[in-house]
Image (tube, rainbow, N blue to C red; front, side):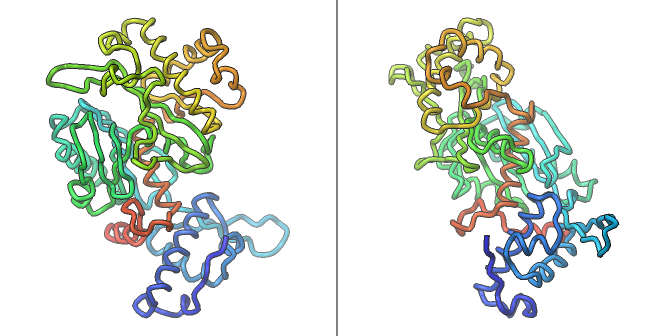
Length: 406
C-alpha cells in the first residue's frame, strides 16, 4: 500500500495547499486512522512502515488527531531489553457515538455503538407516529436519542436507519419500500439534511450483514449470505399479512453487493410464479403462509422452499457461511434437520462441509447494531473510487462535530 506524501505537506497551511495536496492529506488521515483502528493500537514508526509513507507525514498528522480527541497515546512498559519503548496510538473509544435504528411497522429498535463497535445503549419502543409518517418517525426517533445521550457529552458522529426496501446507497435514497409505501424517496433531502451529523438509510437485511463484518478484528467471515426473516403485516389498514418475508444481504470478499438496480437480495423462490402475487416471495399461498407461526408444517414447508432456492445462489457465491437472522435465527436445529432429511440429496446439503450455518452473533440487536456498523465501516474504510457518493463519511465533518463538544 502506498500513500503519496506531498512536498509541502509538513510546512504549508491548509489555506496554502493546492486542491490536490488537500485531497492527498485527507487520504493520508483516513488511511492512518484506518490502520490504527484495524490494529487496535500501533506505533508511529509501524504506521509509516505499514503504509510505506515518510515518518514525518505521520508525525505531522497525529498531533491534529490527538487535539480532536480522536486518538489517545498509550505508553508501553519497558521490556528490560533497553531502548525507549514505543508510544502506541489507539482510537479513543469515547470520541463519538454512532446510532443504528431498525424501523418496523409498529416499533423500532436502537443500538448506540462506540468506534470499536461495542454497544453502549439500546432501546426498544413503539413508533411515535403511524408507520406511513416515515419522515416524522425518523426525525422524532433521532431527536429522542440525541436528548437521551446529551448527558454523556460525547457527540453523535453518525446514524443509519434500516428499513425493509430497495435502497440506493450512492444517492442515499429509497427506490421503493412496499412496507412503508415509499417510492423514489429522497432520504438525503427529507431526513439526512435535517441533522448536523451524517444520516444514511440501508436495507434491513444488508444492515444485518454489515454487523457480521464489523469490527474487522472480530469478523468471522468475508463472504457470506445473511438471511433476514421477518413477520409483518404489510397493510395495516386491511390487516393483511404475508406470514413471513425474507431478504438477503450478499457479501463477497468483504463487499456488499447491491446489484445493477439495487435489488440484490430481493429473494424470489425458484418455485415462485406470477400467479403467486407480487407481495409473496414463495409459492405457498398467502392464506396458508399466514399460519406459519401456529402450524409447524407450514414453517417447515417455508424453510424448505427457501433452502432449495438458496442452492443455486450458494453454488455461485461460494460463501463461507449462511447466517440466519430475524425469525429464523432460533431455527438452526430445524434448518439442519431439513438439510439432513428431506433435502439430503440437494446441493445445499451435499456441499454442507464447505460453509457454516449459524445465527447472527449480535443477537436481538442484529439489525440496529448492524446499521451502526455500516456507518463505522464507511468511516474507517473510506472509498475513494466514487468521490461524489453521498455515502462517503468525510473526516472533516467528524472533526467539526467533535470540536463543537470540546
